[in-house]
Amino acid sequence: MSSQGRDPHSPTTQIGGAQRTLRPSAKVLPEQARSHNRSLVLQTLYRQGPLSRADLARETGLTRVTIGDLVGGLIGEGLALELGARVDPTRPGKPAILVDLDRDGHRIIGLDLSDTAVFRGALIDLDGRIVERREVAAVGLTGADATAAALTLAEGLAASADRPVLGVGVGSPGIVDLAGTVLSAPNRGWIDEPLQRRLQEALGLPVIVGNDANAAALAEYGFAGASADLMLVAVGYGVGAGLLIAGSPIFGARFAAGEIGHVVVGTDGGEACACGKRGCLETWLAVPRLQARIAAGQPREHVLRQAGERLGIALAPVVGALNLSEVVLSGPVELLDGDLAEATVETLRQRTMDQFHGDLTVRMTTLGADIVMRGAAVMVLSARLGVS
Image 1 (cartoon, one colour):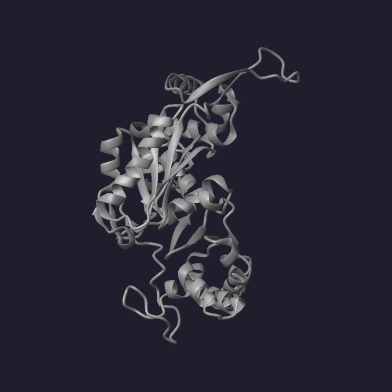
Image 2 (tube, helix red, strand yellow):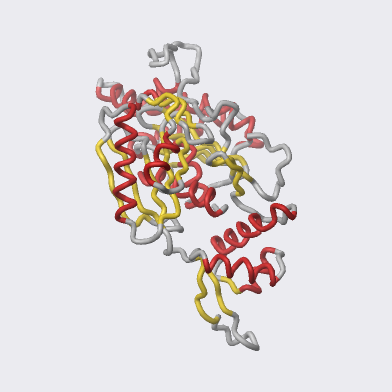
Protein backbone atom coordinates (compact mmCIF):
# COMPACT_ATOMS: atom_id res chain seq x y z
CA MET A 1 0.00 0.00 0.00
CA SER A 2 1.37 3.40 -0.92
CA SER A 3 2.31 5.72 1.90
CA GLN A 4 2.00 8.87 -0.22
CA GLY A 5 -0.06 11.50 1.54
CA ARG A 6 -0.14 9.55 4.80
CA ASP A 7 0.43 11.34 8.12
CA PRO A 8 3.55 9.56 9.41
CA HIS A 9 2.16 9.77 12.94
CA SER A 10 -1.12 8.12 12.00
CA PRO A 11 -0.62 4.83 10.10
CA THR A 12 -3.67 3.66 8.20
CA THR A 13 -4.90 0.56 6.48
CA GLN A 14 -7.65 -0.37 4.11
CA ILE A 15 -10.01 -2.82 5.82
CA GLY A 16 -13.42 -3.59 4.45
CA GLY A 17 -13.03 -1.11 1.62
CA ALA A 18 -12.56 1.97 3.81
CA GLN A 19 -9.43 3.59 5.13
CA ARG A 20 -9.13 3.02 8.86
CA THR A 21 -6.68 4.54 11.31
CA LEU A 22 -4.89 1.85 13.29
CA ARG A 23 -3.12 4.08 15.80
CA PRO A 24 -4.44 7.65 15.57
CA SER A 25 -2.19 10.19 17.25
CA ALA A 26 -2.74 13.62 15.68
CA LYS A 27 -5.50 16.09 14.81
CA VAL A 28 -6.85 16.24 11.26
CA LEU A 29 -9.02 18.47 9.07
CA PRO A 30 -12.30 19.84 10.53
CA GLU A 31 -14.53 17.70 8.31
CA GLN A 32 -12.76 14.59 9.58
CA ALA A 33 -12.27 15.77 13.12
CA ARG A 34 -15.08 14.11 15.06
CA SER A 35 -14.51 10.64 13.66
CA HIS A 36 -10.75 10.94 14.03
CA ASN A 37 -10.93 12.37 17.54
CA ARG A 38 -13.36 9.65 18.58
CA SER A 39 -10.85 7.05 17.39
CA LEU A 40 -8.08 8.95 19.16
CA VAL A 41 -9.96 8.78 22.47
CA LEU A 42 -10.85 5.12 21.96
CA GLN A 43 -7.24 4.25 21.11
CA THR A 44 -5.93 6.12 24.15
CA LEU A 45 -8.37 4.36 26.46
CA TYR A 46 -7.69 1.04 24.78
CA ARG A 47 -3.93 1.25 25.37
CA GLN A 48 -3.71 3.39 28.51
CA GLY A 49 -7.06 3.32 30.33
CA PRO A 50 -8.55 3.82 32.79
CA LEU A 51 -8.03 7.59 32.67
CA SER A 52 -9.84 10.70 33.84
CA ARG A 53 -11.26 13.17 31.36
CA ALA A 54 -8.43 15.55 32.23
CA ASP A 55 -5.92 12.74 31.58
CA LEU A 56 -7.52 12.14 28.19
CA ALA A 57 -7.30 15.83 27.32
CA ARG A 58 -3.58 15.87 28.16
CA GLU A 59 -2.81 12.63 26.31
CA THR A 60 -4.73 13.50 23.15
CA GLY A 61 -4.22 17.26 22.98
CA LEU A 62 -7.98 17.77 22.68
CA THR A 63 -9.91 20.32 24.72
CA ARG A 64 -11.77 19.27 27.86
CA VAL A 65 -15.04 20.30 26.23
CA THR A 66 -14.35 18.02 23.25
CA ILE A 67 -13.30 15.18 25.56
CA GLY A 68 -16.45 15.60 27.64
CA ASP A 69 -18.63 15.43 24.54
CA LEU A 70 -16.82 12.40 23.08
CA VAL A 71 -16.74 10.47 26.37
CA GLY A 72 -20.43 11.14 26.91
CA GLY A 73 -21.17 9.76 23.47
CA LEU A 74 -19.07 6.64 24.03
CA ILE A 75 -20.81 5.96 27.33
CA GLY A 76 -24.16 6.38 25.59
CA GLU A 77 -23.10 3.85 22.94
CA GLY A 78 -22.09 1.35 25.62
CA LEU A 79 -18.43 1.48 24.55
CA ALA A 80 -17.11 3.25 27.65
CA LEU A 81 -18.07 3.45 31.31
CA GLU A 82 -17.24 5.39 34.44
CA LEU A 83 -15.36 3.37 37.07
CA GLY A 84 -15.68 5.76 40.00
CA ALA A 85 -13.35 8.21 41.68
CA ARG A 86 -9.58 7.85 41.51
CA VAL A 87 -8.12 7.08 44.93
CA ASP A 88 -4.94 9.16 45.23
CA PRO A 89 -4.20 10.86 48.57
CA THR A 90 -1.34 12.85 46.97
CA ARG A 91 -3.76 14.78 44.77
CA PRO A 92 -5.64 17.62 46.48
CA GLY A 93 -9.18 18.60 45.62
CA LYS A 94 -12.12 16.65 44.28
CA PRO A 95 -11.12 13.15 43.07
CA ALA A 96 -11.27 12.66 39.32
CA ILE A 97 -13.73 10.17 37.85
CA LEU A 98 -11.97 7.45 35.89
CA VAL A 99 -13.24 6.35 32.49
CA ASP A 100 -12.34 3.22 30.55
CA LEU A 101 -13.57 1.16 27.64
CA ASP A 102 -16.24 -1.30 28.62
CA ARG A 103 -13.88 -4.12 27.77
CA ASP A 104 -16.41 -6.81 28.56
CA GLY A 105 -19.38 -4.99 27.11
CA HIS A 106 -19.19 -6.40 23.57
CA ARG A 107 -18.14 -9.56 21.82
CA ILE A 108 -16.32 -10.03 18.55
CA ILE A 109 -16.82 -13.16 16.46
CA GLY A 110 -13.51 -14.35 15.01
CA LEU A 111 -13.40 -17.08 12.35
CA ASP A 112 -10.35 -18.98 11.11
CA LEU A 113 -11.02 -20.73 7.78
CA SER A 114 -7.37 -21.59 7.07
CA ASP A 115 -7.32 -25.22 8.25
CA THR A 116 -8.11 -27.93 5.73
CA ALA A 117 -9.88 -30.09 8.34
CA VAL A 118 -11.95 -27.68 10.46
CA PHE A 119 -13.23 -24.14 10.54
CA ARG A 120 -12.57 -22.59 13.96
CA GLY A 121 -14.46 -19.76 15.58
CA ALA A 122 -14.59 -17.92 18.87
CA LEU A 123 -16.34 -15.22 20.83
CA ILE A 124 -13.65 -12.73 21.80
CA ASP A 125 -13.73 -9.72 24.14
CA LEU A 126 -12.25 -6.35 23.26
CA ASP A 127 -8.90 -7.26 24.84
CA GLY A 128 -8.56 -10.34 22.64
CA ARG A 129 -9.47 -12.92 25.28
CA ILE A 130 -11.32 -16.01 24.05
CA VAL A 131 -14.71 -16.34 25.74
CA GLU A 132 -16.10 -19.33 23.84
CA ARG A 133 -14.81 -21.62 21.11
CA ARG A 134 -16.57 -23.63 18.43
CA GLU A 135 -15.60 -25.48 15.29
CA VAL A 136 -17.24 -27.25 12.37
CA ALA A 137 -15.86 -30.00 10.16
CA ALA A 138 -14.54 -28.71 6.84
CA VAL A 139 -12.81 -31.71 5.24
CA GLY A 140 -13.38 -31.64 1.49
CA LEU A 141 -15.77 -28.67 1.60
CA THR A 142 -15.56 -26.40 -1.43
CA GLY A 143 -17.57 -23.64 -3.06
CA ALA A 144 -21.04 -22.99 -1.67
CA ASP A 145 -20.68 -25.81 0.87
CA ALA A 146 -17.61 -24.18 2.39
CA THR A 147 -19.40 -20.82 2.57
CA ALA A 148 -22.40 -22.49 4.22
CA ALA A 149 -20.17 -24.11 6.84
CA ALA A 150 -18.56 -20.76 7.69
CA LEU A 151 -22.02 -19.21 8.03
CA THR A 152 -23.20 -22.05 10.28
CA LEU A 153 -20.23 -21.49 12.56
CA ALA A 154 -20.81 -17.73 12.73
CA GLU A 155 -24.54 -18.16 13.35
CA GLY A 156 -23.90 -20.53 16.25
CA LEU A 157 -21.50 -18.09 17.88
CA ALA A 158 -23.83 -15.15 17.34
CA ALA A 159 -26.70 -17.07 18.94
CA SER A 160 -24.61 -17.88 22.02
CA ALA A 161 -23.16 -14.37 22.48
CA ASP A 162 -23.89 -13.00 25.95
CA ARG A 163 -23.10 -9.42 24.91
CA PRO A 164 -23.85 -7.31 21.82
CA VAL A 165 -21.68 -8.37 18.87
CA LEU A 166 -19.41 -5.58 17.64
CA GLY A 167 -18.67 -7.39 14.38
CA VAL A 168 -17.46 -10.55 12.68
CA GLY A 169 -13.87 -10.93 11.54
CA VAL A 170 -12.88 -13.72 9.15
CA GLY A 171 -9.41 -14.95 8.24
CA SER A 172 -9.68 -16.75 4.91
CA PRO A 173 -7.12 -18.62 2.85
CA GLY A 174 -6.28 -17.27 -0.58
CA ILE A 175 -6.20 -13.81 -2.10
CA VAL A 176 -8.80 -11.48 -0.62
CA ASP A 177 -9.58 -7.98 -1.87
CA LEU A 178 -10.54 -4.97 0.25
CA ALA A 179 -14.26 -5.66 -0.18
CA GLY A 180 -13.85 -9.09 1.42
CA THR A 181 -14.18 -11.01 -1.85
CA VAL A 182 -12.01 -14.12 -2.01
CA LEU A 183 -10.52 -13.74 -5.47
CA SER A 184 -8.82 -17.13 -5.38
CA ALA A 185 -8.63 -19.91 -2.78
CA PRO A 186 -8.07 -23.12 -4.77
CA ASN A 187 -8.25 -25.49 -1.79
CA ARG A 188 -11.76 -24.22 -1.07
CA GLY A 189 -12.85 -23.86 -4.67
CA TRP A 190 -13.50 -20.16 -4.18
CA ILE A 191 -13.06 -17.88 -7.17
CA ASP A 192 -14.47 -14.35 -6.82
CA GLU A 193 -16.48 -15.53 -3.81
CA PRO A 194 -18.13 -12.46 -2.14
CA LEU A 195 -17.70 -13.99 1.30
CA GLN A 196 -17.96 -10.75 3.25
CA ARG A 197 -21.19 -9.72 1.52
CA ARG A 198 -22.78 -13.16 1.86
CA LEU A 199 -22.04 -13.40 5.58
CA GLN A 200 -23.09 -9.83 6.27
CA GLU A 201 -26.42 -10.28 4.51
CA ALA A 202 -27.14 -13.55 6.31
CA LEU A 203 -26.02 -12.46 9.78
CA GLY A 204 -27.18 -8.85 9.81
CA LEU A 205 -23.86 -7.90 11.45
CA PRO A 206 -20.80 -5.96 10.26
CA VAL A 207 -18.37 -8.44 8.69
CA ILE A 208 -14.70 -7.97 7.75
CA VAL A 209 -12.98 -10.67 5.67
CA GLY A 210 -9.23 -10.68 5.12
CA ASN A 211 -6.41 -13.04 4.23
CA ASP A 212 -5.54 -15.41 7.08
CA ALA A 213 -1.81 -14.58 7.10
CA ASN A 214 -2.55 -10.85 7.20
CA ALA A 215 -4.91 -11.48 10.10
CA ALA A 216 -2.22 -13.45 11.90
CA ALA A 217 0.30 -10.62 11.45
CA LEU A 218 -2.21 -8.15 12.90
CA ALA A 219 -2.72 -10.45 15.89
CA GLU A 220 1.01 -10.48 16.61
CA TYR A 221 1.12 -6.70 16.43
CA GLY A 222 -2.14 -6.04 18.26
CA PHE A 223 -2.03 -8.64 21.03
CA ALA A 224 1.53 -9.99 21.27
CA GLY A 225 3.62 -6.82 21.26
CA ALA A 226 5.39 -7.62 18.00
CA SER A 227 7.38 -5.07 16.04
CA ALA A 228 5.49 -2.69 13.76
CA ASP A 229 7.71 -3.86 10.88
CA LEU A 230 7.37 -7.59 10.58
CA MET A 231 6.61 -10.49 8.30
CA LEU A 232 4.57 -13.42 9.55
CA VAL A 233 5.10 -16.66 7.63
CA ALA A 234 2.18 -19.07 7.94
CA VAL A 235 3.16 -22.68 7.23
CA GLY A 236 0.51 -25.32 6.84
CA TYR A 237 -0.95 -27.10 3.84
CA GLY A 238 0.61 -24.24 1.87
CA VAL A 239 2.86 -21.29 2.67
CA GLY A 240 1.79 -17.66 2.89
CA ALA A 241 2.86 -14.49 4.62
CA GLY A 242 1.44 -11.33 6.12
CA LEU A 243 3.52 -8.16 6.02
CA LEU A 244 3.25 -5.08 8.24
CA ILE A 245 5.12 -1.83 7.71
CA ALA A 246 4.70 0.80 10.45
CA GLY A 247 1.86 -1.32 11.80
CA SER A 248 -0.14 -1.28 8.57
CA PRO A 249 -0.72 -4.37 6.43
CA ILE A 250 0.64 -4.37 2.89
CA PHE A 251 -1.83 -5.73 0.34
CA GLY A 252 -0.16 -5.14 -3.02
CA ALA A 253 -1.54 -3.89 -6.33
CA ARG A 254 -3.62 -7.06 -6.83
CA PHE A 255 -4.00 -8.00 -3.15
CA ALA A 256 -1.41 -10.79 -3.44
CA ALA A 257 1.36 -9.35 -1.24
CA GLY A 258 2.78 -12.13 0.91
CA GLU A 259 2.05 -14.94 -1.54
CA ILE A 260 5.57 -16.32 -1.21
CA GLY A 261 4.66 -20.00 -1.46
CA HIS A 262 5.11 -20.07 -5.22
CA VAL A 263 8.41 -18.19 -5.36
CA VAL A 264 11.04 -20.54 -6.82
CA VAL A 265 13.96 -20.75 -4.38
CA GLY A 266 17.24 -21.79 -5.95
CA THR A 267 18.30 -22.91 -9.40
CA ASP A 268 18.69 -26.59 -8.62
CA GLY A 269 15.22 -27.69 -9.62
CA GLY A 270 13.21 -29.37 -6.90
CA GLU A 271 9.91 -31.16 -6.66
CA ALA A 272 6.96 -30.37 -8.90
CA CYS A 273 4.50 -27.87 -7.46
CA ALA A 274 0.73 -27.74 -7.92
CA CYS A 275 1.18 -24.41 -9.73
CA GLY A 276 3.14 -26.12 -12.53
CA LYS A 277 6.63 -24.90 -11.61
CA ARG A 278 9.38 -26.82 -9.84
CA GLY A 279 11.15 -25.87 -6.63
CA CYS A 280 8.60 -23.40 -5.25
CA LEU A 281 9.05 -22.55 -1.57
CA GLU A 282 5.88 -24.51 -0.85
CA THR A 283 7.48 -27.71 -2.15
CA TRP A 284 10.27 -27.32 0.42
CA LEU A 285 8.34 -25.95 3.38
CA ALA A 286 4.66 -26.97 3.37
CA VAL A 287 3.80 -29.29 6.26
CA PRO A 288 2.70 -32.29 4.13
CA ARG A 289 5.99 -32.10 2.19
CA LEU A 290 8.08 -32.01 5.38
CA GLN A 291 6.13 -34.88 6.91
CA ALA A 292 6.41 -36.97 3.74
CA ARG A 293 10.20 -36.58 3.55
CA ILE A 294 10.66 -37.49 7.20
CA ALA A 295 8.28 -40.45 6.87
CA ALA A 296 10.27 -41.64 3.84
CA GLY A 297 13.34 -41.95 6.02
CA GLN A 298 15.24 -38.78 5.25
CA PRO A 299 17.10 -37.50 8.35
CA ARG A 300 14.80 -35.14 10.24
CA GLU A 301 17.48 -32.53 10.94
CA HIS A 302 18.53 -32.46 7.27
CA VAL A 303 14.94 -32.05 6.07
CA LEU A 304 14.20 -29.20 8.47
CA ARG A 305 17.47 -27.35 7.94
CA GLN A 306 17.07 -27.63 4.18
CA ALA A 307 13.57 -26.15 4.44
CA GLY A 308 14.86 -23.36 6.69
CA GLU A 309 17.60 -22.55 4.21
CA ARG A 310 15.08 -22.24 1.38
CA LEU A 311 12.88 -20.02 3.52
CA GLY A 312 15.90 -17.81 4.23
CA ILE A 313 16.63 -17.57 0.49
CA ALA A 314 13.04 -16.43 -0.15
CA LEU A 315 13.02 -13.93 2.71
CA ALA A 316 16.46 -12.33 2.25
CA PRO A 317 15.42 -9.90 -0.53
CA VAL A 318 12.33 -8.87 1.44
CA VAL A 319 14.28 -8.33 4.66
CA GLY A 320 16.96 -6.43 2.76
CA ALA A 321 14.52 -4.24 0.84
CA LEU A 322 12.26 -3.38 3.76
CA ASN A 323 14.72 -3.55 6.68
CA LEU A 324 12.37 -5.72 8.72
CA SER A 325 13.18 -6.27 12.38
CA GLU A 326 11.19 -9.43 12.96
CA VAL A 327 10.02 -12.58 11.17
CA VAL A 328 7.38 -14.61 12.99
CA LEU A 329 6.63 -18.23 12.10
CA SER A 330 3.16 -19.70 12.55
CA GLY A 331 2.53 -23.42 12.18
CA PRO A 332 3.47 -26.72 13.85
CA VAL A 333 6.01 -25.94 16.56
CA GLU A 334 7.55 -29.40 16.33
CA LEU A 335 8.55 -28.72 12.72
CA LEU A 336 9.25 -24.99 12.61
CA ASP A 337 11.01 -24.31 15.89
CA GLY A 338 14.61 -25.38 16.36
CA ASP A 339 16.56 -26.60 13.30
CA LEU A 340 14.32 -24.96 10.70
CA ALA A 341 14.23 -21.53 12.37
CA GLU A 342 17.99 -21.65 13.07
CA ALA A 343 18.77 -22.43 9.43
CA THR A 344 16.51 -19.58 8.35
CA VAL A 345 18.40 -17.09 10.54
CA GLU A 346 21.80 -18.37 9.36
CA THR A 347 20.79 -18.03 5.71
CA LEU A 348 19.35 -14.56 6.21
CA ARG A 349 22.56 -13.38 7.85
CA GLN A 350 24.65 -14.85 5.04
CA ARG A 351 22.55 -13.05 2.43
CA THR A 352 21.96 -9.63 4.01
CA MET A 353 24.18 -6.89 5.43
CA ASP A 354 24.98 -7.69 9.03
CA GLN A 355 25.37 -3.99 9.80
CA PHE A 356 21.66 -3.41 9.18
CA HIS A 357 20.05 -6.82 9.60
CA GLY A 358 22.28 -8.64 12.08
CA ASP A 359 19.77 -8.22 14.91
CA LEU A 360 16.85 -9.63 12.92
CA THR A 361 14.70 -11.95 15.05
CA VAL A 362 13.11 -15.12 13.69
CA ARG A 363 10.76 -16.69 16.22
CA MET A 364 7.60 -18.71 16.67
CA THR A 365 4.32 -16.96 17.33
CA THR A 366 3.26 -16.77 20.96
CA LEU A 367 -0.44 -16.97 20.08
CA GLY A 368 -0.56 -20.62 18.99
CA ALA A 369 -3.61 -21.92 17.15
CA ASP A 370 -5.72 -18.89 18.11
CA ILE A 371 -3.65 -16.47 16.06
CA VAL A 372 -5.96 -16.10 13.05
CA MET A 373 -9.13 -15.79 15.17
CA ARG A 374 -7.53 -13.12 17.31
CA GLY A 375 -6.23 -11.36 14.21
CA ALA A 376 -9.79 -11.35 12.88
CA ALA A 377 -10.75 -9.55 16.10
CA VAL A 378 -8.06 -6.92 15.41
CA MET A 379 -9.62 -6.33 11.99
CA VAL A 380 -13.00 -5.70 13.61
CA LEU A 381 -11.54 -3.38 16.26
CA SER A 382 -9.80 -1.38 13.54
CA ALA A 383 -12.79 -1.22 11.20
CA ARG A 384 -15.45 -0.56 13.84
CA LEU A 385 -13.59 1.51 16.45
CA GLY A 386 -10.43 2.69 14.72
CA VAL A 387 -8.19 1.08 17.34
CA SER A 388 -5.56 -1.63 17.36
